[in-house]
Length: 411
Image (spheres, rainbow, N blue to C red):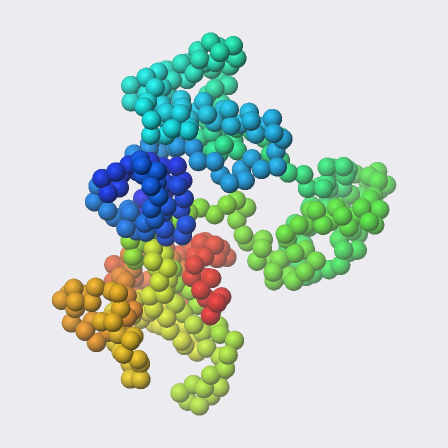
């Protein structure tokens, strides 16, 4: 597996350009920073991580609290006030500074450098007791753990965070039977709601006996089916339904590439157009491209009747080779006319003198699906020869290479 730096998150305290900054937000490849004078700035993530003297000051286990927009939205006011009260005290206990003054002086009893976590927890318990609001040490530790794992939303009672799915008033036996039917429908051909109702009835009869469980009315069944199958396309296209079922249950993680070429993705897609091939035949073609995660650059692309292993291997070489200007191309497309440091690059490679304004990126890690062209010995050998780490995605998991899949779908 490829290595990657620890992820930056909103609220991190970092040292950059000789000053302390707080990470206010991360937007694509850009990072919004606020320095000690409350002056905002925006810097590219790759530039930030590669800058001399850059360091994350905030320990990995302690994060300055930045309330997520909408994290407490829709909750009762007293619940929000209680969560914010806990947040104020926990941030002070973990960082030594008040939430509203993250760069102020550190309180001695909560200084993470001088006092252990347990000593700070005991100090906070004594503070609560002195204020006439005693809180047990066990509760402080439990709330602290939830806050570190889930943020401010973890300070809310889980029962209040559970969204209803319109099935709370229905017989749980009916709900469980219908969920089973909907789950089994994923890989089957699409049928009507009435067919699903009859299947649900058979499941109930098999598990509880004939006539034991009262069946919902037709209208109630339709409402229940809509709630249970929400977002699963149960009554729609079977292909879409199977594609949705392959999506991960939780939120996707964030992969941060610190430099161009650290992680690149490759994918192919058939184009819905007809072309005339060299032999005069008319047929469709496939577009295969490599996308760099750090810069969001399409490093190389090729059109072929069908992508072979040798085409994918040559595409790696094309990403690492200057693209020469072609006859008929406008002079404005030359690398010499771009914002790239052309003079310095020509000193390294003379071929760049006549190159087009396409960046040359050397892949360090390539992520691909399990298509025949990519898992072939030819493509693997090419990666090994070029010193590229080969990382195939999980089977039927396009979210492992979302950028290349998205670019392929646009093709």
